[in-house]
Amino acid sequence: MKKKSLGLNALLNGLRSAINLIFPLITFPYISRVLSVSGIGIYNFSNTYVYYFILLAGLGIATYAVREGAKYRNQKEKIEEFVSQVFSINMIATIIAYLLLFLSLVIFKSLSNYVTCILIFSLQILFTTLGTEWIYTIYEDYAYITIRSIAFKILSIILLFILVRKPSDYLWYATITVLVAVGSNILNFIHARSFINIRLTLNTKWRYHLKPIMIIFASAVAVTIFTASDTTILGILKNDYAVGIYSTSVKIYQITEGLLSAILTVTIPRLAMLWGQKRRSEYNDVLTRVINTLGILVLPASVGLIMLSREVVLIIAGYKFLPSVNSLRIITWAIIFSIFSWIFSDCVLIPVKRESEVLRNTLVTATINVILNFILIPSMSYDGTALSTVIAEFSVMIMNGYSCRDIIKPIIFKRDTLKNLFESIIGCIGIVIVCLLCQWGWHSMIWKTVFSVVLSVPMYGAILVLLGNEIATSMLKNVLNVVKSKL
Image (cartoon, helix red, strand yellow):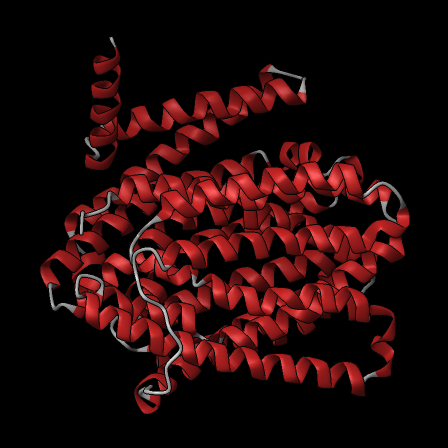
């Protein structure tokens, strides 16, 4: 098959991630004004409740399938056999998830007010399985899923403004949400069958598949506990106001992290394929490129967000959420640790079949996070929650790095990698200076933000080029070549 460009894939996946993250920022202001508080509450509770069953139905299959399937993608018979076996396991898990969901609705009478909305959302369980998006990740086919995602997001916005017009329309809102997911996944399944034969099979290597799948699933559950415990404990120890302030910081943090992680997502199947085919030299080259590229992107993005935290909060959330500025400045540091932790886990440990170490590290981190929340929240409130997240992300980064030290040590401590990090730090100093000058030079929040961003990017790039940074120089040459070709 034709080799896909990692740069193009990163751009496409970044665009898709940006749309998925920006979409709620467009729709929520409308929804929050049209629907009643109770309607939004029923919608959010039902959506969250069904998510746990989607997690159960998915097991750890998507991550496992990408790791194992990537090395077979050029062998049609083997990849079809593998895909069919994994898909069959996924379908069985889906049936179990539905049985448990329906049983819970019968047992827990307190769910009676949510039954209709839960049943609407439950359609996502089956169609997420049928969507087999992991097949597109294996084949690095991001163009199709990006175009499909944009089309359905636009359709959902149109339907939202047409059908959701009064407080009682929360069921329409749930239906539109599900329609987008179901429609996307149906098209996924149909399109995937045009280049690979997906079938149900009883001839499945259960022993071979189940152990790594269950370990990865346990890690996913641990991550869910890790990410959800912050808000839960904050709500228990403080109040809804504290949760609302912290949630705003987290939303902005997740947008930035999601855009940066798009680069990682597209390299995972390539790295899994190279390791699986024992092409160690090529694997090291790609991993080095990923680490160095993210090194010069993550640091300036984090520094820029810290410098413009107040302006970003005001633009996205408004004056009533200004108390979240400090927690945003704190939690932004977690972006750096989270991205590099993800490199060590998804780009190294999982491709080399050390998922049990990922599980151990995640469980330890989840425990650390919960303990720190109980210690820090009483005195620091939402700022304490943000700080606990930073410490937890730093801890899991160190543990994941230690677990794959034999693989990453020759890369991390290479002269070029350390030089790349030093140049990025110097460039960040330039960003700080530009932002401070813009804060002194403009009183308008919008102009201050615009000029800070517009001037920081070329300042950072110029510093890297002057210091001889290879990645920045290569990017500049590519831009100049494109400009020349257009003239």
